[in-house]
Amino acid sequence: MVENNDIRQAIGSANTFQELKEQSLLLKTRFEAFYTGEKKWITPESNPEVANLPLPPYICQPYVRPKPVTIDQSASQEVTANLPSKKRKISLPESILANLPPGTQLSNNKIKKMSKKPFKNWGLERTFPTICSVTACVNPQGQKCCFQMCRKCCRNKCYEEILDCVGHKTMTKTFKERDSKIKHQQGDGVSPSTGFDSSKKIAIDS
Image (cartoon, rainbow, N blue to C red):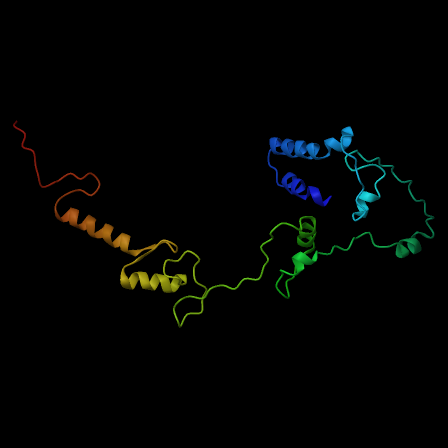
């Protein structure tokens, strides 16, 4: 039923037994009033799958296994050729088809998953990448770049102007300052790791 799509998606993505139990109790609370007789169940005519059920949807449905079909061995090939295909043609709803870019090709498994969860955001909407801010460059810019450039242009800018870019992890300025600090400490005779001044010596009387 369409009213229970949220519970169906939650059960499909559940990872623990507690989550399954919570969704089962939520489904029980929705139909418990109909089962006890507090509310009257009205069969929805707009949903033929629910309307054709022998019992209301909140009661377990009976299933009778059909009898096996016996076919003569001589006429088995003709009957098999005339039997309809068992593969059910899967079609996507219009809400998903409208957001797909033109010429998108989907596999059968992808179509089957999308038909089972039509309300899920599959991230197939048409998007255009943002081009690098450098005029002569046509590469897409990094999503987290501090200068809105591609990796190559950002690296060149950081090396030339001694800058840092956290998005591309190009820390030229930080490394330069660290190296100059280490050289300054070594020039003063101070160890960069311990901070001990090697120029000061302690005289020990023997």
